[in-house]
Length: 158
Image (tube, rainbow, N blue to C red; front, side):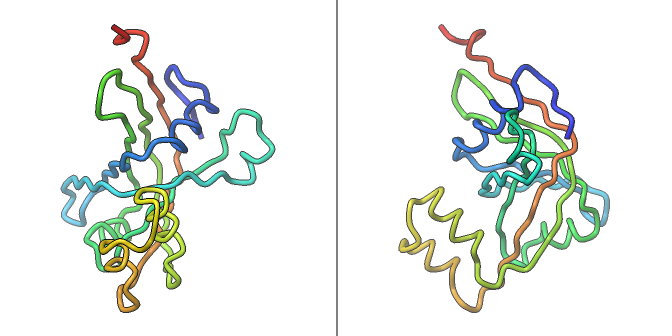
């Protein structure tokens, strides 16, 4: 993974781990139109990152319905662009590009983890709806190729 911008690999990983805004994932449709989708995500450190003090070995994981449009789009073309950024000043964030792999998640492990991360439980009405037995879930794993991190706190501090 190539890192660009003003943030260190460790700062980028920490930002992604601590942020609970959705990731904006951009891809192409089979008709070659652009498509953007917001999804919950979690940071997964890879083996390369486990031995690295820079925390530069990671990927992003999302969950979605197996029947979601974005799944068929990514099956046709796995290249994506993504962004996770703050919604309020001072702005900070991470954007990049990479590829996505898709795997079935029959036990909804990733979805459960994301419900805990974003909603703090799996007992809400939304959680129960998403965790229904008949709903098929997939795991989307974003493998970043290029990542750019920024933080405008110094410029926007006052």
